[in-house]
Length: 130
Image 1 (cartoon, rainbow, N blue to C red):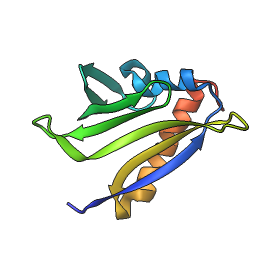
Image 2: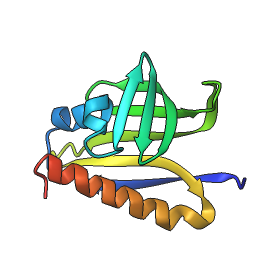
Image 3: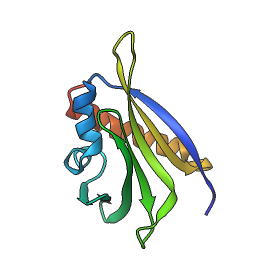
């Protein structure tokens, strides 16, 4: 497997940081836009898409600001890859945006970015930020 590279994308979202945080930090919130279903047991989250399942550990969170999920292997050991969702608020304008930090193989970054754009579009529809 090729080494994956880190990339970041920022999405403006017309929402309060508190509402947005509920959608990025809870299994019920994440299952409405990020995956078909999300279950959690303690710090471990299982993300289900169609017939594939990925496990991640909630590595860190800062209430109202960000969450970081580290992907784990079949033995629930951390891998080197993670994704982070970070709520940014412009101090002057109070505009809210969501910064996504993720990893993809170099030749798949465009495809991965498109996938995030579609998922964030679903999130925006959910919270009425269209």
